[in-house]
Image (cartoon, rainbow, N blue to C red; front, side, top):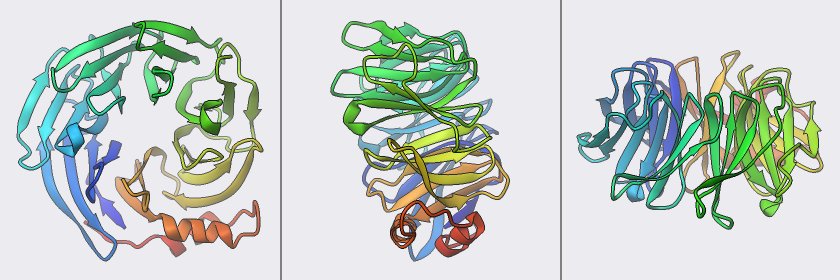
Length: 323
């Protein structure tokens, strides 16, 4: 499925239990769609959420509301049913809000352009934790529930680990000399994988965050803007070139390209709540929903780490619908 959003999207998120997907655009609009495998995606909402771009989008409170962040320093909560404003924090950060990630069912983390991370109680609408973790923009974050630690990557080239229980920055890596753009936790919590501006994947061992323990340099020569964990051994990686690939971790290998956005940079990736669809957004204005059953069937018949042409993968696995 393919939807023309009418502008450059910066983020997307799927509803935690229903067939709904939301996207935030460069013009400040928040869009909400209902999708189905056998029908055109139906736009349910178009909300002017922010005066500047809508950089970050997350469903909260069991999917009853959508939280958005913006360079206007605000965080907005929008009602999913009506599109009305539930609450707006005008000065949530001193700088542009660049990233939102869910932490627990009642808390969410936000990261800004100056390296500050805040954790919010969505029901009390108050800040629980604040960390001056980085010296440049927060590019991505992920949460380890077992250790109650929030990991973040930044344009300053470092990985940080924030301890929510003790409200302090637990660890920070050495400078990698390139911007770190994305992060996932793999191998049952033993490894942390970061995507970089040069296309190299940096692997860190849990508890040893000062320097990476391994590098995978063969993935791409373009920035890896997004990483999405499929399982403990495989990650979906999206690059500035528009290519989306399935990648094995330890052993490090490109299993195969699985999707693409022509030559346009892919901004974000997300799975639907049932993992039946992979969602991707790009500078081509498109939100694409890829059928995971078809993608994984293609992998199963590839007989190991075979590489198939990106164009063939896309045409085989994409059901195109225009908004």
